[in-house]
Amino acid sequence: MDFTNKRGIIFGVANSRSIAWTISKSLSENGASLAFTYQNERLKAPVSKAVKDMNPIELLECDALDENQIEEVFKKVSKSGPIDFVVHSIAFAQREDLGGNFSETSLDGFRTALEVSAYTLIPIAKHAANYINKDGGSILTISFEAANKVYPGYNIMGTAKAALENSMKQLAYEYGEKKIRVNAVSAGPLPTLAARSIPGFNDMRNIHANKSPLKRNITHEEVANTCLFLLSNLSTGITGAVIPVDAGYGIMGL
Image 1 (cartoon, helix red, strand yellow):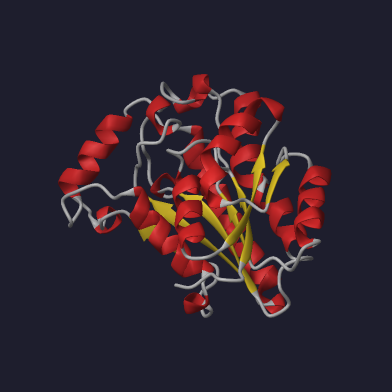
Image 2 (cartoon, one colour):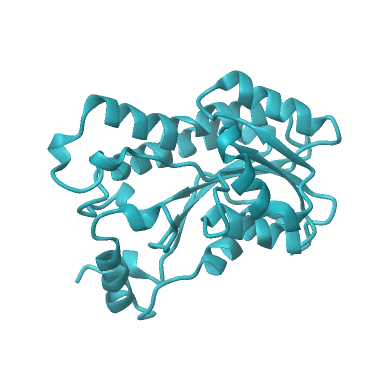
């Protein structure tokens, strides 16, 4: 897939082990010009270090819960040309709301997880729509099967992913007439730094590997390959879809 002369913004690179980083690396290797955001000054250095070999066109501060900062990101990046795609790979829950009983989820924890992990897609898509190439473009977010099924320990993040997927579908409808496609990739459990803090994460990995039709876990690169497809012109007929990259685990009943 050739992304030469294509420009995109990546929200959510945290380090070189994040899903967004592997997506970005694949996009860069295929010719894309990329802008990256970091949440605050404290996180600028690790993000800058992670993406330095991708020749970023911009590295911009953006708290995704601040709509003014989101708008400013799109204004700055669009000054040098139209935007062709956007990747939303943002998720967070308070540690105390992962593991234990779901019924113990605090109101503050519920709000935090839903606002960061699901709501942020909405203003990003809203402002992206004003700057994406008039010939069409793509917005992509990252989900997980816990949006539909119970993963003990994942708790409030499962609720957040369900909200994220529903939001994605509504945005796909709203922006379809502008030739903007909005999709999600539902990735199997990947060993990111954030994922390893989830209670029972290693059990998730082992069960997926044992029960999936392919009898193994997926890789970051496999997720990135599917993301590139959804961001490219090869997928111009697909919007509002949740594409699983899970070695087939999601089809299994037993």
